[in-house]
Length: 166
Image 1: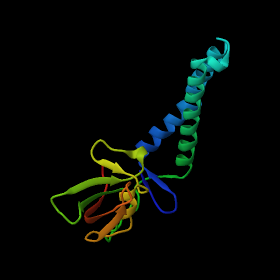
Image 2: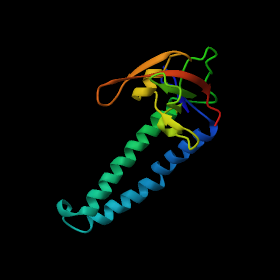
Image 3: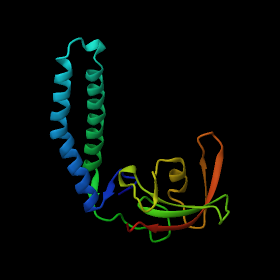
């Protein structure tokens, strides 16, 4: 799965099916299960001191947030392969290798994609992450700068950018 600047998310058919299946479960059986938990906890009495009730309501909130995320993701999804960059420009859906501070012995290879498409094969960085946004749109051979969580700047040189085939 990859994202483009038009807020389109490219999904493989397999990823789309998996996310659609998760959404169907969350809006069907999972909603029924959580409603039953809340009803059972409500019958236990005083809701102010009912830990089971509060836990079930929190679980329901998290579940509904995930439903909204999946709905939005699938509404903006296109199934197929994201257009590949012919000129070596880093874009979502690419496996990128960078060298920290230009040191080719200190490298990192990662998939630039949203978290729903995290891979066991390669570490995944979001295009919105500091490193992801720093390399996005740059070309192989260029340097990119990004801000660390502590406010300091770091730089990397882009060594490779290839479409993810995983």
